[in-house]
Image (cartoon, rainbow, N blue to C red; front, side, top):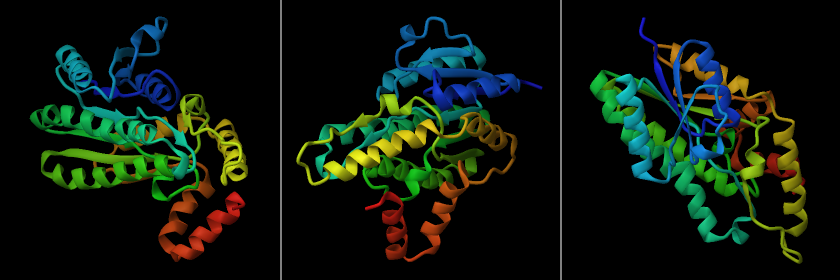
Length: 269
């Protein structure tokens, strides 16, 4: 049986690296991507190529490199993304635009590049790594929530558009996992004298603690494997701590005022 070919954006560390290592061990042909290949001279877990999701030419070059070598591309994992925190009122417009350009526009660019190849070969699987945060507006993470929520809705629309092409589009939404995302996240500065100073400073500390105490990214990798092994995967898959997954159910079931009261109690707002 021919091995399936996988492309994982943001594959040099964290969740992307865990997915790549797991799928490699399962016999898949894996290509991970990074914005700057020169920063990873000793990377050997699987093949790493250069791709910047904000650059259409870079995406085209990377995709053609994989297909030129392997003759096909069966699975795309849109994992590359950035974190952003801050009171929306105090978050610079250019940082908001950057977050959307990477987390929302980026995956769309990659999908637009690979879908014609998948259609020509008779099908494929696209897994968009969203977030449990994308199901609700989290205080001081509202922009991040919005980028991931927008990607979830676009994935829903594209899934219906692509249903006749045997291209399966799945959103995989992790909760907090122990990765280096906090180190690369944009933090709007805590401004002395700001009306948000006390609450944002405290919540920012809690956010970083949640990541540090998060679950092993291997759980996300296992979820990816389960998706690609299914002939008819669920459109949306949540993976994370029980309470984080429960919050999505509560968001759907409770009146909005009740849900927001629960959130405010949780964040001590």
